[in-house]
Image (cartoon, rainbow, N blue to C red):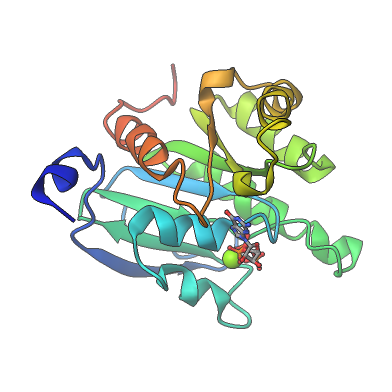
Length: 211
Ligand SMILES: Nc1nc2c(ncn2[C@@H]2O[C@H](COP(=O)(O)OP(=O)(O)OP(=O)(O)O)[C@@H](O)[C@H]2O)c(=O)[nH]1
Ligand SMILES: [Mg+2]
């Protein structure tokens, strides 16, 4: 990368440190030292790919793939400036209804209780309408009042002709303003810098809690 290109990167990654997992509601979490940005989405939406693209590491999210750890919340300090919070993917099709609902107390407990939370990146598959679980999450986030950005994933899979209408429809279906839906592809890298800039902006905002 040229010096010129590096200067325009809204989020140059210098260091990433894995801090550890939260395994149960109210369980261990890192000290509330840095602002936190959480990433939410259903299983297979492309979250691991997006996180790796965002931080330009091929295997950041590997820890989240260790068997048994996929239902935990993982915390990563980025540049010692903010903490990236990888929420468990929800709605995996091949688990029972009871196991399916396990994510709710953990995710909602974290989002409701974390003092330094500054914003949420909600991933939605650009090709499909939001699922019922997606709509539950979006409702929860809206009710909580936490600043939220939608990343519309796998946008490389949309045909050029259908793309504008599909993205507008996704914004409408998710109740988000058009300009808070970021088209994203971990295959082409589209949306990486726009999402990084949105995150840097959220990190710099004062807390929304009690507003
Ligand atoms: N075409 C395309 N495929 C993608 C993109 N992002 C992810 N995928 C594919 O979608 C599948 C799921 O991607 P992951 O990044 O593992 O998704 P995840 O949400 O972390 O999934 P789980 O952790 O397994 O629940 C993989 O086959 C990826 O190669 C994208 O931007 N474009
Ligand atoms: Mg994953």
